[in-house]
Amino acid sequence: MILVGLGSNLSEGKSGTPRSMLAAALGEMALRDIDVAALSHFYESEPVPKSDQPWFVNAVAAVETRLSPEDLLNVLHDIETKLGRTRRIRWEARIIDLDIIAYDDRIYPLSGDGPDDWYIAAGDDHITHQGQEQLMVIPHPRMHERLFVLKPLMDICPEWMHPVYGKSAKSFARELAAQENKGLIRQI
Image 1 (cartoon, one colour):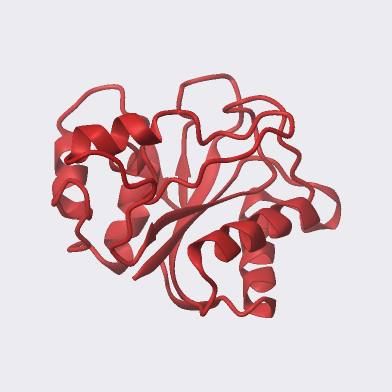
Image 2 (spheres, one colour):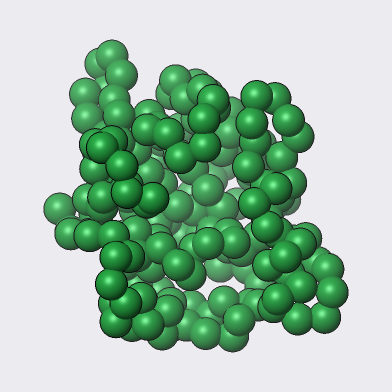
């Protein structure tokens, strides 16, 4: 199963709202051989880490494509650029954010013998800053720590299993719900 996370907390021009930015991104995906097999509800979530930014609108899509993980990532970045995203500052407000959450059971980068080795290899080095090359990290290295990914993921496949940690989306969400300060989220 290929999972793509969508998020926006800004809008631009005719697009109107963050929700319409997600719709525009989904439309662009359909034009580029990325077929949406299932789409979660849309959710509003406060920014993580907390800030005075507007709340995000988030969703997760299960997609089908013949694109390799590398090509899919490039197409998602092309869509972001077409819709007006520029990457400047980490965790800034975004017109659109498209992330590969998972690509079947593949793990990138594959390093070491266990989950801790994968996470250390993934680290935070995958973030692109001012033209630096991006390291592809699959599954998304913090997806299991983000309710704004897990809640939508549970709409379409609550039993999805993390290929590194061996836990389901439902299990991660239950663990996060028991913790404080993990961000507010509500279905819209």
